[in-house]
Image (tube, rainbow, N blue to C red; front, side):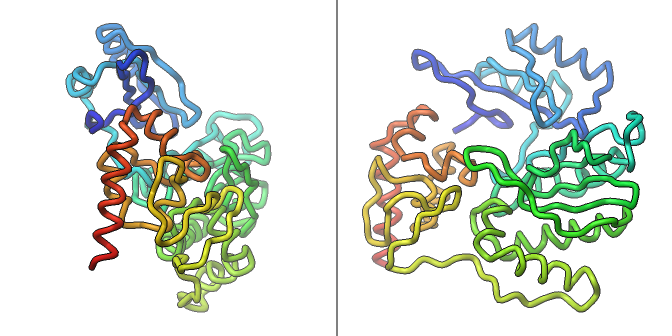
Length: 323
């Protein structure tokens, strides 16, 4: 099991090193907090790394030091679900930038307060950009907002990773309050109907026209939609592989799980295996790597014995067949 509030970073000669990444809303940090980071990193021989999510990671740490590190930082471990809102990236906006059109700091911090670490069907990232230059990379975020002279434009379904996808524009020229209301509808719709898939994968599965119609129907006051969308179901037929989607391998219902089985296929065909994978410390089941990574490779990256993992997974699958 992982040390509380830490991520496995590297395995060298059988030795594992970990990282902690305290949450810094919007990337803002007080000098005294920054000093604590430096003191802890120096004491425990860690390395400080500025992340793309506007946080400061302390890496190259030993498992036995993690609990003491959180205590010395004076922070609660940055815990959350593996599949959750990971980050809300915020540009300076009108508060600090001469090109800003809208107050991205105010909106971004409110989105962070509402959603950070909330459980989602898969990992989820937000981007808030105060002008069309989009320094927060809002069009490659699951939910992105971009400020213009007329207000906020809202985008959905963007991602980078191994299968990049530009976001679709959902609505434009909204004020602060309508932007928050629309984002809330998007999040609830995604939570209710998506499978273990990123927002963009979900949109590609059901179609953007359907996604937009359902979300805007509620936003425009025509009532909450009882959508015909459902989380995708598994049949005895082979699922069609799609780049970047949940199914890229060849596993079908009835097949045993092997070292070559793709992670995304395993959780799609046999969802009862999800707790087993998480129990082995493989929590990020919606990450881009899961869509094409065989079990053997994933186990090696996490320092696990693949044979032991295969036995545990197939026991759960067999138990499901017998009930």
